[in-house]
Amino acid sequence: MMKRLLAVWVLVLGIISPSEAAQITLGVVRFSSPPELLQEADTVTETFRQNLGASDAISVVSRTKTDYSLDGESDISEVSSFGRAEGCSYMLIGSVNQDKDIVVSVRAVDVQTAKVMFSMSAVSPSSGLSALSVVSSALGSRIRERFTGEYPKVLSVHSKEIRVNRGSSSGVREGDLFRVYGELNETLDKDGTVTGRDTVDLAIIEVKSVQKDSGTAGLLKDAGSTQILSRLRGCRIEPISREEAKRLIKRRAFSLSTIDKKISDSQRNQLSLSINPSLSAKSENSLNNLRASAEAGYPISQFRLGKYYLHRKDFPLALKWLASAADMGNTGAMNDLGYMHEYGMGVQQDYQKAFDFYLKAAEKGNASAQNNLGGMYLNAKGVKQDFKKAILWFGRASQQGNAAASNNLARMYQEGLGTKQDIGKAIDLFRQAAEQGDMIAKINLGTLYANMLPKAKKASDKKNYLENARAWFQDALSQAKREGNNEIARIVQERLNTIAKLSYR
Image (cartoon, rainbow, N blue to C red; front, top):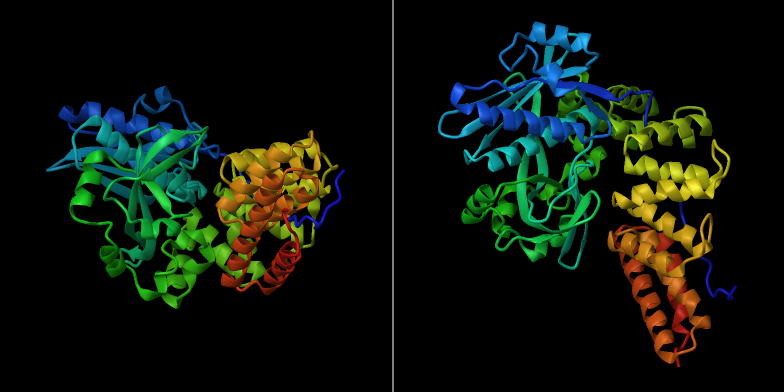
C-alpha cells in the first residue's frame, strides 16, 4: 500500500425511508368514448396501465378483469364494489372525448369510501395515436406521483449533457422529447381545494442515448437557453409530442424574458418547489393549503407536510403525516421514517426499525432508501456487517442517479471492501457523483488524485493528478462557500494548501 498524503474524506450520506405500507393495488377501468374514438380510448387505457404498472410501488390488476363489465361511464359505487372484490385500493375511471381537440379526463376513486380522491385532464393537440399516447403518459406520471411520490426528473447536467430518469422502470427511448418545467404556486378551485400547481416551461430536451432506466439528452434547438442549463438539475420532466414542442417554440416559451415574467423574485432561485419539499410551505397561505390537501387524503401533500415539520424539528407532526403518507404507499415518506428511527428524531433510536423501513422502501425502488440501506450494511446498523450487500444496494441507487450512493460505491472500490480494489472504477464513480454536484464526492476525488501522486513515475502523470486534485478541491471550496458551509470550506482549503507545496517535476 502506498503512503497517503491525505486522509480520505468519506461520508455515508443518510437521506430519507418507509412505513408498514403495502404495495398499492390499482384498477384501471377501460376509458369510455364515443364510437368513433374507440381506438383512441384503447390507446389511452393501455398507456395508463403500462405507465402506472411500471412503478414498483403500484400493482395494476389484469386487463381482462377490469374490462369485463366496466367502463369510464360506470357508476362510482359499482366501480368501488368491483375494486373491493378484486383487492384494489383505488380505481381509475376516465373518458376520451373530442370537441376541437381530444380531451382525456380521469378520476381516482377510493374504493373504501366510494368517493373521488382527485380528477385530472389533459388535451392532445393532435388526433394521432402517438401524440395521444405521449399526453396519456404525462398524465399517468402525475397520477403516479400523487400515489407514490415518484416523479420523472433531470438527474444531472454536465456541460451540455443532460441525464434524465423517467421515475420508473419503463425507461426512455432515443428520440423521446421531454418538457422540463419548474413548479410555482399551488392552484385552487373555488372551494379552496388544491388542484395542482402553476408551472413554468424551462426547456425541451431530446434523448440521445439510453441506459437501463435513464437517458442522456441535449437541448432541442430553440427550446431552451444554455444560460439556464445549470438550473435544470432536479426539475421535473414529462413527455411531449413534437407537435406540442413546435407550438411552444413558436410562441417563444423558453426565452429568458418569458420565464422571468412568470416567476417571482422569491421563486427565481428555486424554480421547482419539489426539489426541497420543506420549502413548499413557506407562506402561511401555502401551509394552510398544504394542510388542507393533506387532510383530504392526498399522499404527496401528506409527505410534503411531514417533510416541512421534519425540517422544522416538529417531530410529532412529522411522524403523523409521514406515517399517513407511507400508509398510502409514498416511498419518500417511508424513507423519512427510517431516517427518523436511525437517528432518534422524535422516537427512540432503533437501528432495527430503521433497517426494516429502509429495506421496504428500497425494495419498492426508492433510490435514497437503497443508499441508506447500503449504509446500514456497511456500518452494521440493525444488521450484521455485509460489504457485498452494501455494494448491491449502493449500486442499485447509483444506477438511478443517486449521487450519494455513487460516492459511497466509489469508496467501496477504492478500499476494496467486499470487492477487488479498483481505483479506476472508484475514480469513475466519484466523478459521476461530483458532476451531479455532490460536494463530498468532489473532495474525495481530489483526495484520491492527490494520494496517487507518490506512486506516479511519469512527470505527465504527476501533472495530471496534481491538476485534477487542485481542480476538484477548488470546485468543492467554491460550492462550500456558496452554501455557507464554513467547516467544509476550512477542510478543503487546508487540502489545497497541502498540494500547493507539491510539484510534478
